[in-house]
Length: 364
Image (tube, one colour):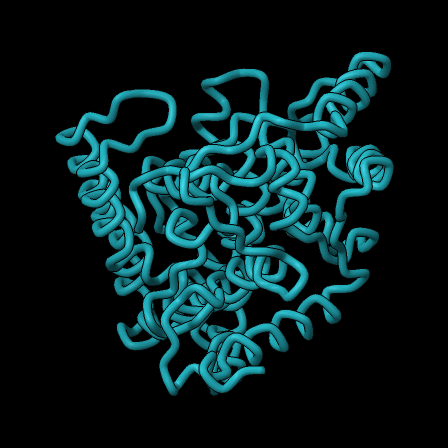
């Protein structure tokens, strides 16, 4: 990844973000509403953790047919993704609660999802939210050589098939977290001295990473093998991760890797054309904004535009904030990309993968 971070323009002639901030702040002030979560988020937390852990203990306690074991493993994966999008995500953005200690606890739920707080906050809060969709800076665009997410990535002949195999590969996201990604990321981020909210302590971080992995594998693999035959445990573990990885990957890809969103690059002075806020409009899209199901389950991440502009505001407010963002973008003649349904966004993503898979030398 490029270590020479670009800078954003400070010239906002249409006063987009100033106008938007005024409207958003007035909404919370006039209605006496906190920007953090409330009882609705707390209830959802209970629901998502129940969805995550209940099938796990059912598998350990009760004898069951193999097909039911597999089905419950899928349910655990759905719960795993749900905890990540609704609880861990808000916690690590500091938007779950006005109490820092509670945000820390909820953000720390990433350890039971196979991840690491330090790595996630650097990759997501710092790199992705700051340099959204900028090749060489937003690591969420980096799939190695397997998938070509931007026209700036190197092309290989197998990419012409990526619209067929990419979604299958998405399911490997979280299992890569627990096996390899966390170790690679921590080494790379510490070498670059990257951090979020404080100076990193390498010894403390490495010790915490190793201990958290031991605890994680003990809970999800070692303990179950006392109750269930080992190969069923391993298969269930893989299915759990594959389900969660597929869900989490698709939520990101539908928001950033479609034809509408751009992958802008800095000029020769390493400067971006737009301000940071306007940049988010050009690089992000919403999907299924009116769907209760997707709004609830994805933790508002189908309102990705609102999340990128206001990551410090809990996702339970995104539905309302979206009205202000859309209105202000239209008034300023700026884009506001959204797909009405999950299906239309998925089709757009697959079509974009197909276009990116074509040989650039032969493309018209």
